[in-house]
Length: 353
Image (tube, rainbow, N blue to C red):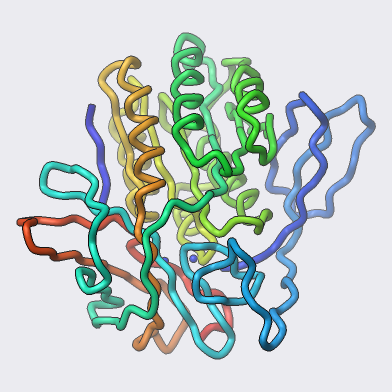
């Protein structure tokens, strides 16, 4: 098994639309208002233009699952959060040692944060297992036909090893993307959605990633966002580009992305998965056999549940809106080398400068 990983996003709240029970719902990127077709046809999931959410009132206390900094409700990303007066960044970080073992016992003073190379003062720090919102995005193209059973089994292993309060949705994609199960904590519903297999068509990977990232942003109940993408080929059908997908993931509400590139993912396909995962603080895995996918799924679940939450207030943002690079380092007695995986940067929301 080979893994690739490296050492946080613009906020909008979009409405969720009703899911027809046990029906495959097309997940599209249309900008028009949603139209509900006759019940005989599965209603499409469409994305409206972003609408601002109501601001938090003075003195209002954050809800249990709001960001640790007590920021406004519209900024419940759990990655980093912005206020109008004081901009604050919240990072989720995984730390591994030289042997790639998770390191979970570090203290606040063991970390250093840099933005554009300038040290930043950490304003808040903690490590605990909090529920996440997760999108499971699985290649359903023709080449996946003989792989889906083992992939579905591995995904169920991940779900069982995850926090039982996680909210998970399932997207199967080929030429088009279908939301086969909206947010739920019910493993039985998720298992049923994983068996909505057609295994035909081409691979519109970037369209599926962008649509799924937007769908994650639609729901603000939980702060922490994760995407798991599983595919056996490179994109050959999307209207979105790799660069557009990366920018979407690097917005203020972008999720951490983990990817599993199955047999046959080579060249540009492998590079694309590595790029989108690394930029968000996630990991791209490339198993040599399908039998390795179960172990990878459990590793991802453990990774998600073992992260540090680090907040800081940027002191040196660009005068003009643009990409803000971020680096986090860790040093602690007894460790010769520690690697921190977190976002490599972010695009601030408009009006934050």
